[in-house]
Image (cartoon, rainbow, N blue to C red; front, side, top):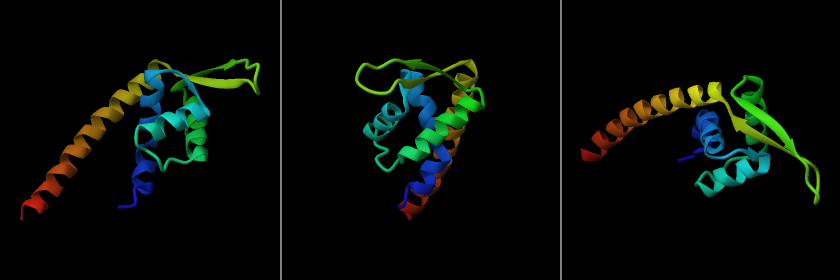
Length: 109
């Protein structure tokens, strides 16, 4: 199964979940998503999602100076982002339960 389309539909939730665990900068979020098993996630998709979630008010940001390169823009989740993540978690559980039921029913035949 090509998971690219699935990933597009859940990338907001995945990014919010990663940042809810710990603040992070763009590539750090990409790395954590890939480490969690989303190897196909694209850098540009994650950076765009971070910018969009920030613009929507779900994330905060702050800059951390670096002695070894450019400053890094870190993102953190705020109350609005936590509320959005809670809704997305609920919706995901309901959707995945429904789909699992359909797939398991078909496999039992």
